[in-house]
Structure formats: structure tokens, C-alpha cells
Length: 296
Image (cartoon, rainbow, N blue to C red; front, side, top):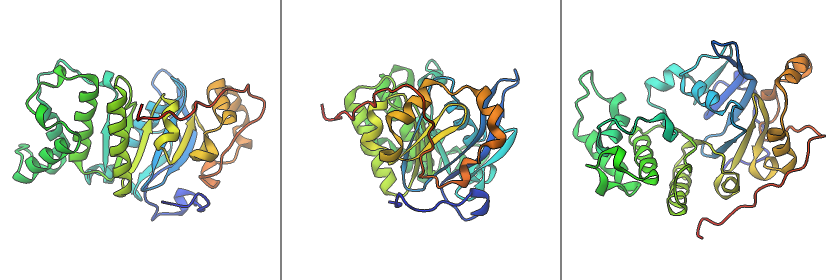
């Protein structure tokens, strides 16, 4: 596990950096709404990093930028020292979507959903090989979904659906895994099994970024935390960063107009140690959710 005092260089000065490097990106939507502003962070390889922020704070936009679904108006994102395009061609980035991003009425079996993770390895006709089928079976077994392989995806419970898409991510064999709200709509038992799997994947060397509103779970499994509200407000180890002051700054509101007004005076966050927390005084105190046991 990387030491919390490890110096992280600016991504543009460190071309051999693995993990996810987000370098000073801004994203503006077609309606002129600025969704991300000068956002910089580094997700270390072999760690689980929690992405935390309010609704509308830019979490989904950051995910889409990392996936290559959105092109920033400025800045760049690299995956394992590669451009997004190269990382996609090498199937490095696996994604577990939110439930509301999926059409659950589409007639498709669990096995075929997981097989989608192998599409990038197939030829134009997408004919699965023996290896593809073996990897799909192994992925289903790892998340405890083998017995549901022939079930229609829309017939599953919330937790089963989440595990099916986790299996798809495993089948893709990507080194980087992004999970968008993986604990929404799942029971405690399923949440515990997901956390256990994520920790195993981390120990196997995967880089994992998890967006979640479940603040009580952050301290139980995240090595590092990124706090986001239209820009990166704090980033570092969970112990150093997941504090009342930083959460108050993130959820108490930091108007984008103030960021614009002072942007010329603000240092690029990527030039700091990425394990250093950046905070501002004067925000109301809130209580940090205490870690809850997933055994209960």
C-alpha cells in the first residue's frame, strides 16, 4: 500500500505514473452550465478511493470524463500513463453504473450482460471464444451469481443486479474499476460482499474509484478520499481527509462564483502532494458519520 507521505508529482511531469491522473480539467455542458472547474486529483494504483460530494457537485461528470464519454474544455485525464483513447482500446477501464442508467426492461440474460465485458476482446461479429465463456463463468462465480446466469436481468433484486454488473466489470479484466453508487438499493449482506470483493481486487493491484453517498461506509473500506463540489476541494488518505471541516466545506457549499473570482490566485491542486488535505475555515460544523459495522 502506498505510504501516505509519498510525494506525488504533477501528472504532466510524471509520464510513467500509473493510476488515474486528472489534470486541471473543466467541463461545460451545452446549456453553458459549468459542471467541473479546474479539477485535479490523482487516484493511486492499488487503492480504493472514495469520491464524495453533493448531488450536482460533478461526481458523474468526473466519472464520464475519466471514461472518455465527455471531453473536457481544458485539461486532460490519463489512465496508467496512457490517454483515455489508448486505455479504452486496451480495455483498462471497467465501469459499474448506477441503477437508473440501465434499461431493466431490455430482454437480456445475466450471462449475456456479463459477456458484454468481453466485447472489447472479440472480433467484429462478437462471437465468444471458449476463453470468453470461461471468464464469464468465473466472474459470475466470484460474485455468487452462477445460479442466476439464465435469469433475465430485470427479474433480479437490487443487490443481484449490482453483483451482475460487478461480474461484467470483472469479465472485462480492466485494471481500473469505476463504481457509481454501488451500495444504493442493496441490503447490508450484499454491501458487505461488495466491500469484501473490492478489497480483494485492491490487493490484486486494481485501481478502484467509488462514488457514494453512504458516508458511514467510507471509513470501513476506502484507503483514500476525494471531496468534490464542482472542483476538487480535498484529496488524501481517509484518516487525514474525511474530517468534519472538509465535509462541511464540501456539503456546506462553496459557490462556483467564488472559485471563478479567485481562480487566478488559486494554485493548481495537482501541484500539491495529492495526500495533502486542502480546506477552508469558516464553514459550519457537521458530524462525520461514524463507521458502521457491515457485520450487523
